[in-house]
Image (cartoon, rainbow, N blue to C red; front, side):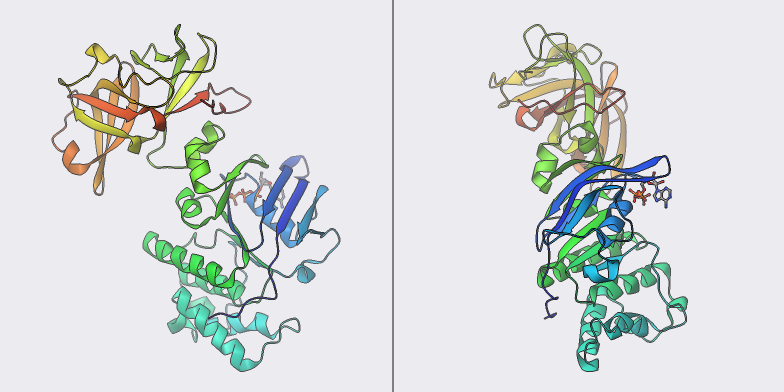
Length: 391
Ligand SMILES: Nc1ncnc2c1ncn2[C@@H]1O[C@H](COP(=O)(O)OP(=O)(O)OP(=O)(O)O)[C@@H](O)[C@H]1O
């Protein structure tokens, strides 16, 4: 069992602004990470993730707003005195020293000064979890990027800390190792109960690791929530697009005269009540894994691409069937992504490989989706992505 750190802490950012010259990196960040929580901050390149971490660590001072650790304003508190352990993607290691020396050096600092035997135990535990035990005697300069990255991560995790701030710590690992490391990291977090703020641009990683996830864009937090909240109730099309591969289908359409979703280009209607006036431009969000594939030409399929609904549900229960033609198929391991033409629109779905075997371009197919899995959004505007419409 890894010994607990010197007590863990909550992290708060209160309206944090930070500019670099004319470049606005953080535009009023509000964030609360609870004590002991594993929080993933997800966003595209340049969104402000690293700047957020640096601000919490005290390596950058906010232009306005404040960082709090354990409810205490950290303005003017030096990084060293904040008690947080930081791992940046551009890791600073001593290349001529062994991996062991790199791991032990933080523990020798006057702040921690762990007895040698305790330090050794701690290092071996972490090294085992990170799969670097056999590398401990090697100079860091002689390690691969992925191995070096694990040493850098180990260097952070061995330290007793009130919080871990990790910036893309797995980015240099290959897919398989990354997956294994994810599980280890989660285990370390759980064992230590240490607050962790984890930055990534990989949504799979965020979904796998985060007790909660925050999505950041243009220096602002767009949404925070559990993986279920983010997945089922994305704030807008930006958040919806950030999670799930293949990407969510966003089909543009308008509210019909009877208040449903209609796609003139797709030649179909979906009997969902849209709480907006007829004619309003909206988008239907359909996750590829929420669509099932059947053969065309039977059951309740609509004629000529029209939608048919089951159970007469309009408020979100029941289902919808659409007919279309195969455009392209692509094997994704055990499943196949099938892109289907609906009129002049396209929709992707993921089908079991067997179900999609033998499909050829222009084959007619029938699609079925539960109404309760469908999402509605406003149309995207130049100034902002369309927000989800609550039904
Ligand atoms: N030292 C700096 N000087 C000038 N601009 C900076 C500096 N650091 C960051 N920026 C700018 O601030 C914005 C946010 O950068 P930041 O590194 O926080 O983004 P990020 O989300 O971590 O991106 P990435 O995933 O690419 O690391 C970007 O536009 C970036 O160019």
